[in-house]
View (cartoon, rainbow, N blue to C red):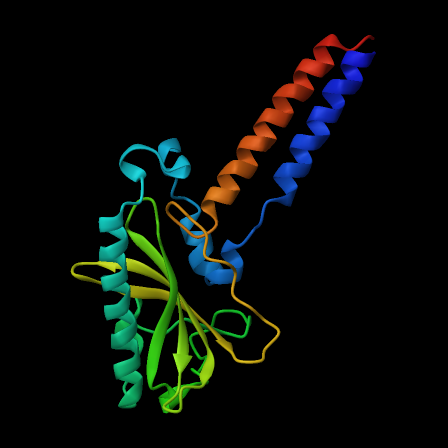
Length: 213
């Protein structure tokens, strides 16, 4: 009986850990984009950041350069009132403003008030094909207007934006922390969740075999 109680506690712990992991991807990128990425499965080493999937200083430097080019293009198109679509992977902009659902019709609330961007941080996906960065939007007087949170795709000698989340200053909505990912934002958490569930199911089956009938 003690053995059964112990195994049951382990199962409960594993399941609790699995359910507790953050489900951040839909919060950061458009739901349609997120769903389209779920069919892509990377090798286990990628989720664990091993081997060639380790993020190196060189890949971070390259990612920083590419993301800066992408955001600079986005800002320059907006400054002259041009369509910002060419800065995105699709032919239209995909914006989220203060936590709202991603939309092709959303409008950048900062407009031409942004004088410069100041990068907060950058994450390079373990496959080095996708990036996520955050920037403070700052006006000419040095005031912080809010935050740009971009999910980007590597493209030739630069990058293009998949989805851009905008957070105005003072809003209760806040961007998710910059966390490592492999192929799509949040996939490492989902991989560990699935792994924990498999381990919990394995322990549960073992418990069923040894429990008295």
